[in-house]
Image (cartoon, rainbow, N blue to C red; front, side):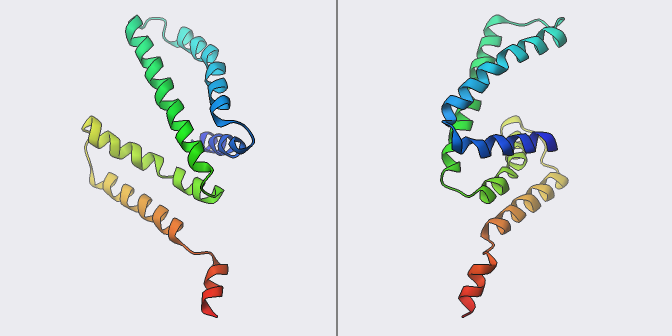
Length: 138
């Protein structure tokens, strides 16, 4: 997860120097051969319904692609620090969606984790910089 986080951070930081839509589309196309190799190596015995496969690829590519485009549009409006902190909300949002959409159990442990995660993110985003605080004291 740490490597994925660093890779995502680098990918996001580089988005300002390239057209995000073009870069994302090119990366999706480059990932197809790797995905096919992994599928052939590890899913030999699995039965794959052609229509299901096409729908899964289309919905995955569409939702991921749309998510990337929205993220890069937001990056233009926020600082790198804000973006990195906001990214920490992704596991919390995924957990909440699991509870809402997949009827997963909302345990006490999950509730505490969600509250603490979102609270710390909120506090971090609300915190004023020391320079602003010093300016307000004068």
